[in-house]
Length: 393
Image (tube, rainbow, N blue to C red; front, side, top):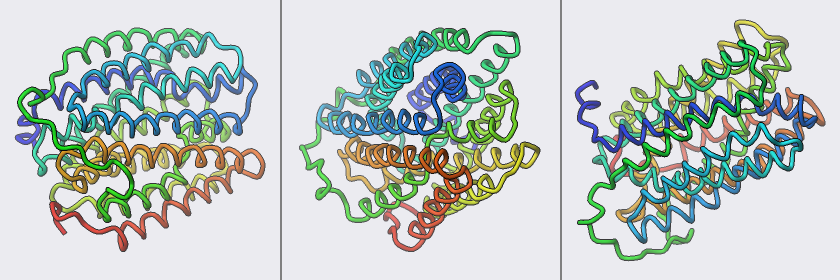
């Protein structure tokens, strides 16, 4: 595998480094938002679910738009640059807000940036590698992305332990935002000036391959149970985890995901994506069933968060690689737009319903319903979604 890693092009590593730096900033802030919302803005899980659901749905709509434009223009870099800049320089403003609607506005701006950049970035990764290296390329990207998610919580935890306020931690996120913008400006688009633009094809639902549509239905079902990860931090805090340890617990998730992402995604190039996605969705369901019955913090809670990191490692890069396997030539941006739209739009009801069940009934019911969606998605992935011809059986 080491030889394959060294053969990956510069673009793959640079995109990975950009994600590393961006996520270090994002995850300085991300685990602290539930605590800020509850302790400073005086809002509960229902409000958290509404904010996260609207934010992710906004990002999803823009991911389809930007993906289609990439296929039409074959230009990805401008969208990547502006997307990372908007998110990076808007995120630290969270520390200045005094109401949850203002927090919602900042989260919407952050997700607009994500919506603008994600599909173009994924299409750029696909253009940079041959089909038999897609899993590895997306795995490396996810590994570096999760490395940033390790750095961010560690920095946040250190700042909190040193006596910094939540607002001061948010302010420090300006530094990686500036570095991320510099790295984005260094990107080059492989072959953009020599490869002619593909003939326009339908970007609508009816124009998608039948097998890809089935895959998107399964993604929609799984995402319906895959609410915002902020509820994991909220659950940990509720079970008695100290405030300064919450970022470290999320850091554990990211460490496991970082270590496992590249080898597991590369493994999918050999054995097929379906097997890993089935196992990953099942692992998610089991983690959420366990969290539904968890009574207090302890080593078992840390173990569950580690297993959640393994789920991320087995699915994040593999899901993206499978999109490229289903897509036709010249439609990768559109395919990623539909994939990201499907997942993002379903996060609105997922986070809102989860928050409603959490606050109105119990955390146990919310986590159990999410687990049921994941386990059913695993079954459908195994027996209903076809294997693309480019993959091993």
